[in-house]
Image (cartoon, rainbow, N blue to C red; front, top):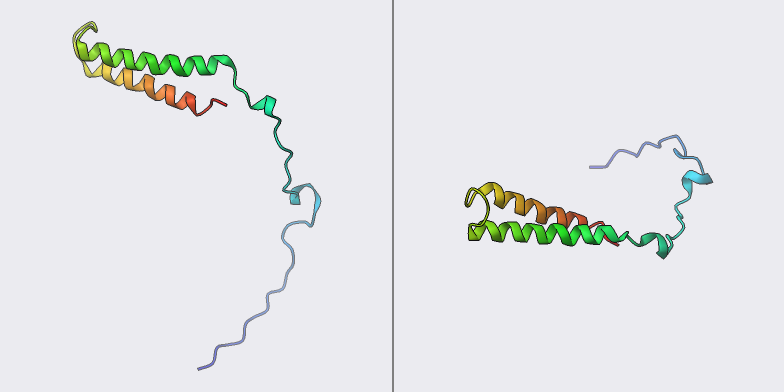
Length: 90
């Protein structure tokens, strides 16, 4: 059994040749622009420490109203905020 001959498709380049849209080079970023402000590191460590303290105080029973899941979720939310902030640190 033979295969049918392939059909030739007419047409050409879809995108324009060369020019700014065809260029893939981007200049390297200078090391000075990669540094984060000091407050980003302070916020990260502050949120992580606050989350740990809230969870510890909830575990010991020193939070107002006793041990509640709301305090646990608040502590975990602070820790998650610290982790998300850590991804923005350069």
